[in-house]
Image (tube, rainbow, N blue to C red; front, side, top):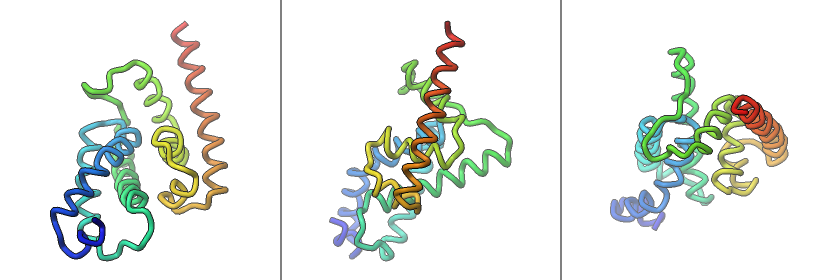
Length: 164
């Protein structure tokens, strides 16, 4: 399918969109905390992927696509920081209280820690894939993941104490 898409077959590319759009969208939601922004990043990711399909190497397409989404999420978050806006989690489809608490804990993480925990713990990627997406070594990923898990654990325990 990728080969056909690289040759300009739009139907093949649409098949790739259907196959990977949920993964890209879910990653963007967890990173950005806003479904509307995640939709935009998802669309932009596929537009960029289509435009740059000629540069795709023989790695995993999903990793390559999530790498594009990751960079777009970083750009969006940098833009928000400039505007001094806060990342909030809102939306009709994710009203479950536990997801809200997890999103709040994720929002408190620095971006480098947030991205590793989303890729490995929430999206189930292996260390090699996640490291490739983030352009870091697997060892760096493991260190960041350990730090991220401690932050999340501490944040969840703080939320629990506040609710008690």
